[in-house]
Length: 173
Image (cartoon, rainbow, N blue to C red; front, side, top):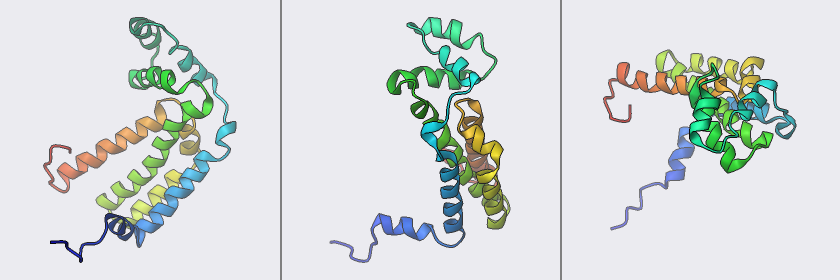
């Protein structure tokens, strides 16, 4: 039997974005606009060129020995870049795109964590701050471990909060 009262899944998605969540979505869109402004014209910095030069090795062992062990930055981003540039190339837009997405997703995570820990006003103010200050906007546009580090740290806090605050003991947490 077909259930005619069941609403389509996209309707439930639209129901989620009302009230404070709609404001948070608007803040996240502003964050995306600020991070993608003149996206095709953002040049590489010297730090980025240094990291990209350490991805151009023919063997994985050379990459580890000469590309990761000589740098003081976390190895995860260098490891990610090694495979990312093999697939998408060395253009500024291709290399910077995942880091910009990390910066945008961080804005939403700040809202969710602030709302979960305190209230939605704290979440909205915190996400508006992270969305618009020059520090986070600029470091979201640089392919270094800053925006992705913030994103993964916020993910850690989010799932840790699910376990500690909400007592949700699921395997994915």
